View 1: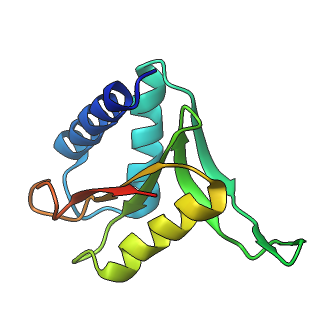
View 2 (view 1 turned 180 degrees about the horizontal axis):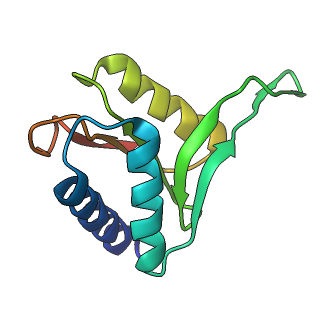
Length: 125
C-alpha cells in the first residue's frame, strides 16, 4: 500500500477513536481502540512490539516497545499527556532509527481537539 494512502487511513482511524472516546483516558485504552479500528480497516497491526538496541554487535533487551506498527511500515506512538514535548518526538525518531522504518506518527489523545502539529505529528527518519 502506498505510504500516503496508509497514513490517510491511520489518521482517519485516529479521529474515529478520538471522536468516540474523547480525551482523558489512559494511553493503553487509546492504543487498544486504535489497533481495533485499524484492524477493522483490514490493516496488519502489531502492538507492543519489542525493540532491541544493537550496541557493538550485542543485542540489548532494554525494554523499548513500539506501541503500534501498521503494515510493517508506520510506527504509531500513542500518548495521553497534557502537552507533547520534544522528548516525545525524539523518542519516536529513535524508534524509527532503531527499527529502520521511515515514518512515524505521534498522537496525543489528551487534547480538547485533535489539531495537526499539536496533537498529531508526523516524524520522518
